[in-house]
Length: 153
Image (cartoon, rainbow, N blue to C red; front, side, top):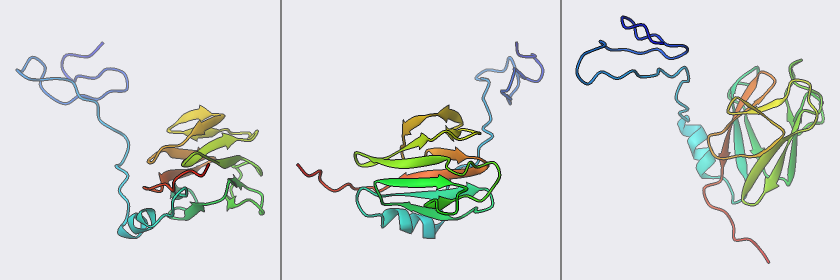
């Protein structure tokens, strides 16, 4: 229950004066907006059809970009992984990104710490532009190509 003086209730922080006309509690976001640098924006706009880009938001490779352009792209601590994430929080063979339709899905492949999309533990999930994939302590934002090639029959 909210304290009538400070508007505090659980994890939500509210600002305003209770009882004042038009006052409504508001939640404050703990997330910084995801704004791409001009270079990253240009890379996303230049993606070929049916490809995608992962941009590392945090972790030792912060700022790194990983192109998804094969049917399967592996991610893990193993040196032969397509996306090499060298940290103890990442399993040797942690996850794979699988082309599915015009985009990609992420599949956890038995990792110890799990694979998360938008802070939810997942086994297999199709990705949408702006989704945050967390592998160990790496946070990767997914961007799909804007236009897709026509599917062949």
